[in-house]
Length: 193
Image (tube, rainbow, N blue to C red; front, side, top):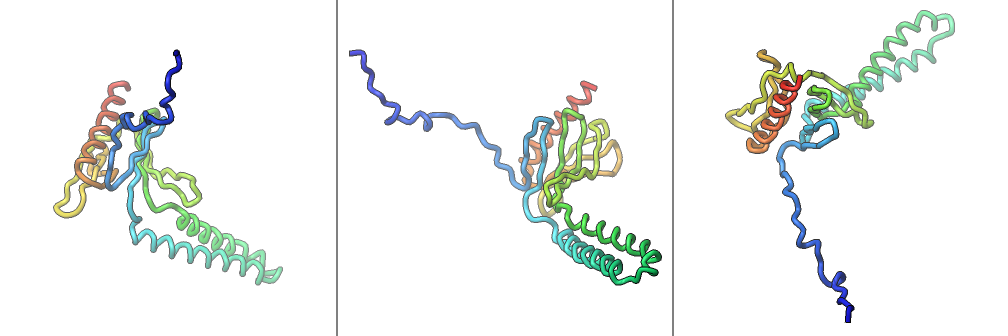
């Protein structure tokens, strides 16, 4: 009499749940973090950079091999005089290999906790290298640059100078949402400080 039929196996509740709207963005990805957010460009890296890194990898490997060859090929009396040349060649080769192992895509990080905008590149090993770091007070404006041909680009202008930083490229509607969010973050941080 008090038995209720078990309908949990026959009725699905999951189909009735409302899913939050996903923001479909073209040209860049917006990744949330506890400290702020990261704007990552999507697509292929610039061909010129890939070619430069390939040449740097080959040149660095050749210089390191040359320094090792000089170290083992020199006689014991000449080795003392060859040490500066070997170290110089090894340093040049290591620098070229470091440049070749850097990533190809530059990310923009908006850190609302520290109040700064960072330009960061992810290395091939997974580490991050900070290229530039600017406080929110250094940013003069956030605007969309509309070229006559091609895709629109979201730009940051430093104070009232001609120096700009390209944040993302994509459709104008997506960039407008990102521009509004960045503008809000910058204004709120200025009012607090």
